[in-house]
Length: 115
Image 1 (cartoon, one colour):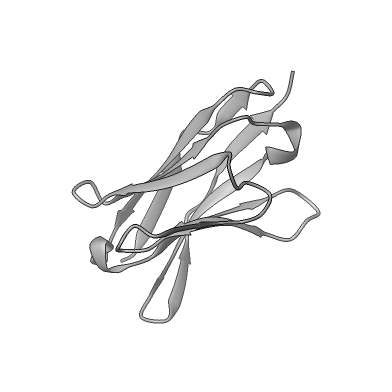
Image 2 (tube, rainbow, N blue to C red):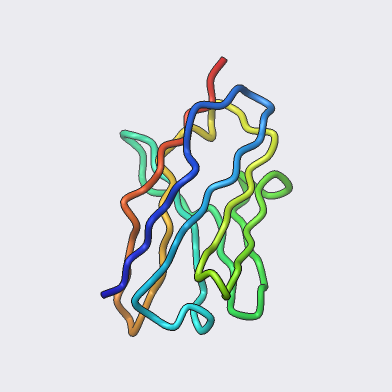
């Protein structure tokens, strides 16, 4: 069964950095594009960025230049390095993958940016 488990969320002050992790299992990780999304209560889920099997990265406009996605195929893990965080980045962050046309989501990890 495909499983995605996020970790690394927490409380951080504006301007600081945080790294999120996603541990994946149940599929051949190295063949799949992985993505991060985020959601704030009352708002639609927003695409943050993605990384292909060839390590091509793409980002949403709101995080370009501040966030970086990476992957470690030996660990079946994908990461989201977040820098220059501001309160607008406060959200539940979700790991995402499509396997054989089925969409899978992790349960999310909460990031709160506040002074």
